[in-house]
Image (cartoon, rainbow, N blue to C red; front, side, top):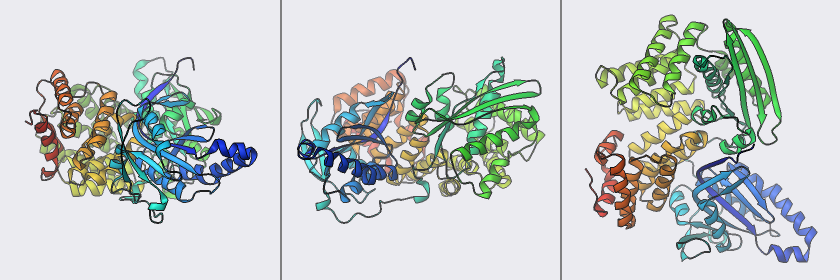
Length: 584
């Protein structure tokens, strides 16, 4: 690529270094290199893979590893240190923070602090930041001991550090997993589907090429043994010509599918190629010249070829679900694609949402048993209600949305996304028990459904269990990194409610980086800063909130989230009061 590619995100960074490496090399260079290689191949690297980490780079005796979950990072470090090779002793430092991914390297505060923490660890142990200790409390069997404040090179503020060493701990046990069905192993094959290029020479056909890509994403997501990046994230590359190896690093996947669509009259040409993001080599490629009526067969073929190329085993039920497109009517499918295009548009308006509803209804007029169209309408009606775009009252619109979501499940009871849609709609009826059950059902079918994970996390948090929401939020952000700006908002609120104020502040700051015009994240950050005693900074942040939205009301925003009992939200108002800011 000609241009340097950068991407920033929230990540847990593990920095590891060999104790006394220079002395070991001076005493026995060949033996030390052999021992280090053996340690990496048999202990370190397998532990990183088991805990869903990504080795960013090796630096002689040092290693830098990125995790999307701080719990995974801590559990990985504990496993490595409790199974230590007596010939290779490590120090490990872990931090959670903002990182910048730039082509083959990684930078940022999250990396710098992890690197400074590592030398502070005892040989064979780990040293972590306050944010890490806050984030994992109650979520892992690892217990840290306070190490006080330290001043380290090139960091302008003292760091509160925490220590752990296997000599001070009990035997390693299985990490806590509050909802084990939502945790999928990162060793499984992973893929991102980029939006197919529209080669039709007609900009109005964009919905069709996008629709082909989205249908393939939908079908691949039916495979429980395959991690599929959500549409929000893969479509962030629309209109670009990225280096697919860079895309793989940014999205954390081993393969990327790209292609093109040319539609002319009743003919369609589709090209597709699956690229290994580690080598840049082709895993599979093909071209299809077919009648438009064969479009469903082509999508099925592409999906099955990808599954085969990635060596994923399909169950008979999963294969049947892939081959079931929901309709055999091209016109109904075309209206569905148009309607979905309005839903996923970057700037939804009343007009575009109502157009989406009209297309969904037209699809059902043609084929009343088109389950995907029912599920689409459930979401569109809910969006219409939330934005006050529907003419009917909220209860009527929500009842209609629930009806469509329920019909979709009745027509196709083994599709995770349909249960996720039902869970989303039921949230707004305040039926948290049924919403939670629908999300759990979706995840029992496919543990990698980002929509269901986020639904379950929100319902869990609104029900007064913010700690239980953390794992789902972190997992959802891994599956849909392009939606991180929204997920970070809920992650920050969860930490605020738990009293993890340092972690909450860092999370809201990351959200502001990704969404510079957010008023809500800034207001929440002002509350957190009030708790931390940073009153002047809280007031400065609040002034920015008023500049963005002079009518902002914290109580109105909190009421929209419908916390059960409202008792959990007292910390939000307390922080604002401590900073001398309005709570109304």
